[in-house]
Length: 70
Image (cartoon, rainbow, N blue to C red; front, side, top):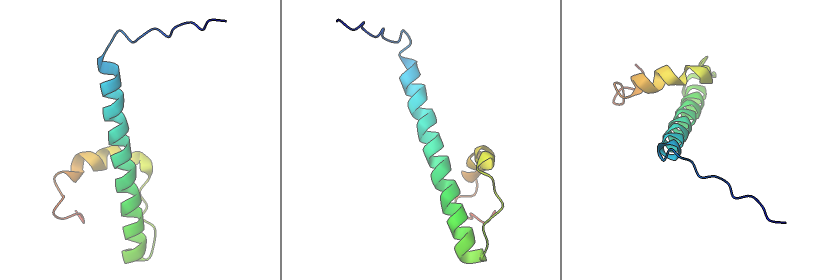
C-alpha cells in the first residue's frame, strides 16, 4: 500500500510565522512564570496576574526592562 504524498505548503511564510508565534508564546510563558515565582519569593504571595494578560505585559516590557517594578 502506497501512502499519499503530503502536499507541500504553497506559502513559504507560514512556517516562519508559526515559529515567531511559538517563540513569542515561549517568551510570554517564561516571563509569566518568572514573575509569579519572584512575586511569591519577594512578596510572600502569588501575584494576581492571569496568563491571558501577558500580551499587554510583553508589549510594555520593552519600556521597563531596567525597572521591572513598573
